[in-house]
Length: 437
Image 1 (cartoon, one colour):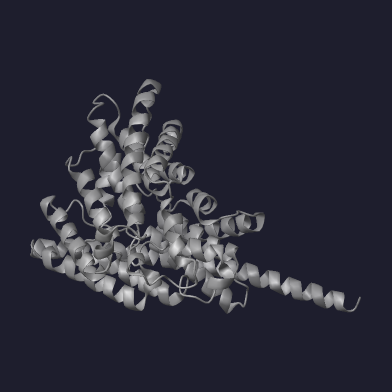
Image 2 (cartoon, helix red, strand yellow; image 1 turned 45 degrees about the horizontal axis):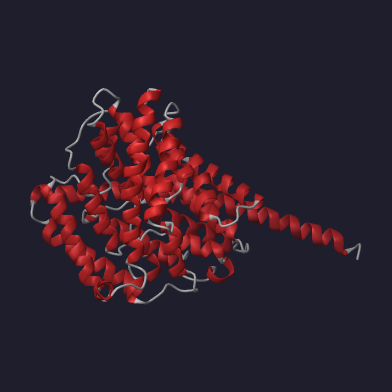
């Protein structure tokens, strides 16, 4: 027995080295992938706008056609790639042994997710790359651990997903917070260390290649205490109501329901084409405001500039239509844009107050209303604007929005949508082919 001890210790040492190498290489790989994905998304949006400049009526043909094609291909060939990707990662993290060799976090699904999201941006879809980046990052982390013959645990999947959030937004703290609040059912010490390691390394890769940037640009809002006591509840209540309605609509499309819902769900490709037409029409009537992620308009509003008042409502319609189509794509960036439009509408009532600060509160209110993750919402807003002066009104708004949204939609969006993926393979019922993006 004593002779076996050195051998056992050596084996454990090799296993630890393999674990750490897999985590480091996986984090570097997904950091690179996130940057490439971001650049591809930017190019895709520019190409679509270039097409619109050449032919203003092209979206009425291109957008419905691409929506229908992407949903058809995804539904029949890559069902685990539909929608956001975050529910898939949550489902895989809950039962890693069952899903380690499945499609939820496979490289095949990751490629399909990337291609599907880029295709949606090429067609003007109101999607973001953040949710897809989470699934792609988790798949890359799992693949690297397989190559090193390291067991796939919940920590591996959660660390990949969290690093994906950090790399997508350049928000390392938000990545850790999202892992704690959303991805992990039980956040253990070992998982915490792996998450922080993966987030740190992917952040360093992003920092080295993309530079030390702030996602929406640095701002200093600041808000008098008296104004905060009025604006925060308004932003929290309205954001919670709208975000709760958004989540409830998407969840309803994946659950057994009334006969008219069943009829709609039975023709997913036709539904996708109709959703594409709604997106095309909304963008056409608003001079393209509602197409794509909405990043540029949101950045301008945060800086105190103005946009057409229709921006928020149009972005809401475009985003919910895109999400209901069931195509691959995220809701993070579009949700922030809807919130910015909501904040602009609220700022009209307070002409003497800093408009950018109220826009920020509208963003955290609506974003929290959708995802029901107040801690992540506050941290991600702070990191994306580098503004620490708004911490108290941000927290107040997020807590109010979370409470209001819970009254409207009792289930948390990603948790509810992840249920359809927990059976080992993605569900095939027509009603389960539609998912939040």
